[in-house]
Length: 83
Image (tube, rainbow, N blue to C red; front, side):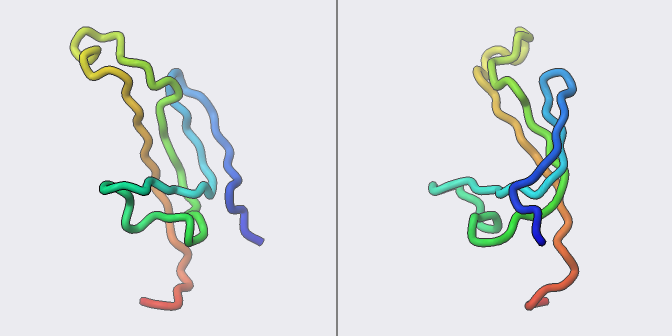
């Protein structure tokens, strides 16, 4: 069976670090992802994101305002219908 939607995560300061098979969908919009959608099974991988999106307290970066950051890496399974 697939573990779609399952994950394990922990906190490191203001960061969430985790591993799992989460859906990745950004859109709709002009900048939506062309390779990530809810039409395919999630890619198992690791992720890192900010827990609290409030503006940084540093005077160097406070002008940015609220900042959301999320990144992930994953590995597709080897068996594919298309090369």
